[in-house]
Image (tube, rainbow, N blue to C red; front, side, top):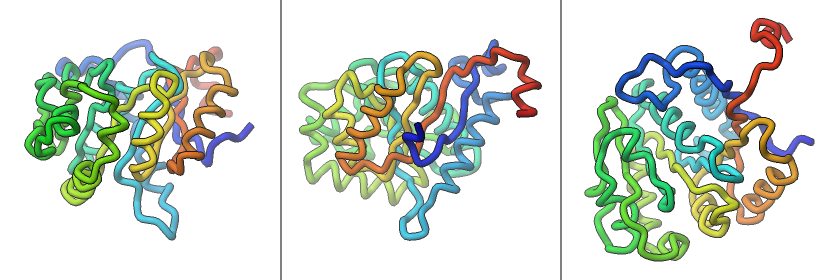
Length: 239
């Protein structure tokens, strides 16, 4: 069944990570880099003639452990390596990880912006990768969906869109907090679903897609993550 407008790319489950001592959890070298280059290319190609380029992008999944943080972080790095000014936002308050990947402070972050009235730009931290900036999760004090309803958050999104070429949001899985995810996704330009190959049933993926569409979120497509090659890779390449 064709659930999405397009499948952006298929990320193989690589046997080894790229030779990257600073960020060993990211697939941003070798074959890993190729997959994220494909994702970037398909994103740029996805522009509807009647719409602006999707620049505020949510990345989520159906369930935990499907690789959202790795995909979001690796994708943000790939965009930054092309010279685009990129902001990576950790919106996974329950299991924040972006601050660990890029070795920045957890707080202040998005939580302080939503609930303490902190200036969003003041919480943004530079990373050690040129053109890539990070807004970590910070501390959660309330239901995240309530914070996204505010006029202050709407103004923050407008500022970020002016200041950055792309803003990538690392989100909670939908089965964990569906109302929060669909609310934020509906405020952004588009959402990409990460789907772990051979783990998640298509009915669950369809449910996630329908919830996003019902909330008027722009579902850009899906990424099939941790793809296993059950026959030799060279044979896949010839198919």
